[in-house]
Length: 296
Image 1 (cartoon, rainbow, N blue to C red):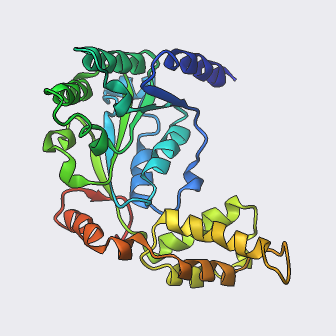
Image 2 (image 1 turned 180 degrees about the vertical axis):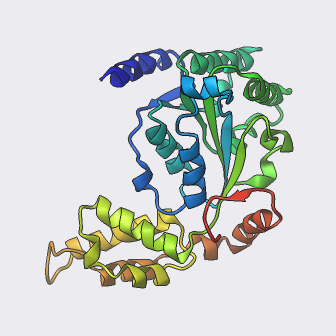
């Protein structure tokens, strides 16, 4: 109850900034399929913000960068970390930082980061950071100054604010963002393996309050090769619509065959954007990040 009360007070403080959005921790580690390496890394740091860790001599972790293929669970992971660590999650809207008056963008940035420190310990989620930092092209250098302010803060901050930065387009990311000291680790979220796809199906079927043993998870995992987590979730939802709208047996429960039919109607991103996905996976194979999954 005390934690809920403190989070409510923090939420009230965050409302003062138009660039920050408060999320109460809700996702659990069981809501995310796969990503075993990333999950273990997070578990090891679960008590990282405690006084016990300070007494041991450990510094507070600075943050992680989640790079990878769209739909593989980067945003979901940010929410999962907040639930795992029992910390409030604050999303920074980079677009809302930019103002029309001279110096307004820089002031908005300083104020937003100061507010994040005020409610520490917390998680600061910067979603699709590469898009936000490219908003100010041709703006007289404002976007570069905003970006420099964020980088300096990430390096020098003393309050326990853990940054979760997500990105899809690596080519737009400046190298200084991913330098160690600003983030503790860079994880790459790849196409899920067959074992991970099986686990993802299990998560989404269970989330719809259906018994997972009623479905052939091995068959579904094999049929969804090249699909990301978001596409697997959509296939489950589409299967529910197929069953619910069945003209011959209206309202029946959905089955493995319904999900397979829904998968067959989709064109996975690994096919529709093959060149982009291959480029992202090449970045991982060059050793520039750690895979978030075992065996990926």
